[in-house]
Image 1 (cartoon, rainbow, N blue to C red):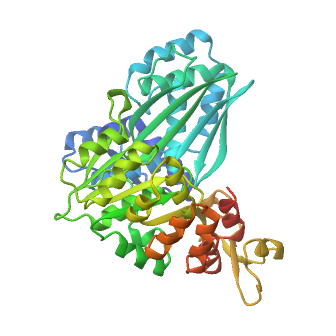
Image 2: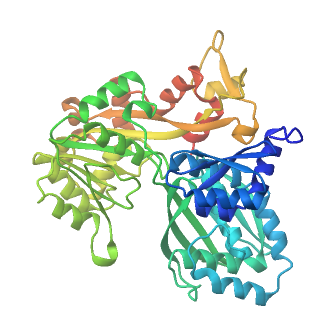
Image 3: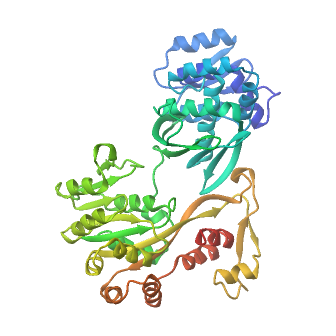
Length: 502
């Protein structure tokens, strides 16, 4: 590198100027080091020498190729040419100089595939929004129209952060671009629509679920990002305490019965179920799932996506699954009595059944099944265990420091005498975007439905009574599991309280 270019940001900008992004991405090569007279570039195996010679001729310097795996090339391309925080804002400024005819011309180009090198500002803006969301590890993108602007927010580690404001005159073009990508009806703006986008951002394959909703100031768009190249974590890595993990490990190796995971949307239920399935995924087991949607593909497991348009519901799909000689069945969610009855029948006839319910805690899941219309004796005969869970943000390891929380906060969490205890928080840094948190882990409540609990459930379906007995018999509540993670320096009292109170 020349002596004039020394700091990391300048190095990056200098390398971007040497080779245009379109040429670099198309030919799968990336500039690595420039000494002035010599340029080292990363190339894939099989890159023709003629291409290197052409680059040398154009740049008037010697070009030395370094063969690298394509996955590394893609990561480096994203690092060197990836979006910066201000690029979307710059595109919006460019848009302000365009007239309606220019924007209409941009929309005509939208039939092309997602192309990060497109010159159309609307296309570039949407691309930047997608790429930035992937870079930040966002799970959702919210685009909300108001009177003067469309607000763009990213959900990162379960919390929404505002990242961009798009002038209202351009929001229709942005929504139309997303509709074209997701194959939705551009002309229909009065009804909600659902679609899907598949794209590649650097080395990542991303599946995006799109939902539009008409509001007073235009269409609201929410996009759910599923990174297909991200490996889900194993059962031992999702945050279970050692005793909880040991019990769950035994439960998932049973040959029959039902194991339920409960919690609100976004509480990590699917991650827990996938981790359990992956743990017992062996050639000797026939595992079949029916999901809405399939979030991650697991080799060795047959996964069926729900498709109500053709009549493939959870209930109908489950009926067909039990005729496929399964050992283990995953039902994405028990939403109605019909699905619950089939799932329970399957668990009583030699199948291990996993599923989810939307309840606030484990004891409430029992009440929910009975309220659906399931006979009490069927609940106690089929359900082996119920896992309630939440996701809490973990303290950023780069800016972690001791601090003293308020006594009122500790009392609310049931932490009495705080003397001798050390608490931590993140002070906020560039790596965690000033939040003090990086990543998430789970807190869990494991309810075992054994013979004794069966007698309690037969006597009462009141969730508070069932919970009281379960706690007396040793069940660790969600808040108590959260306190364990606070005292071990994994998360903060504020975060546990925020999640428990949701």
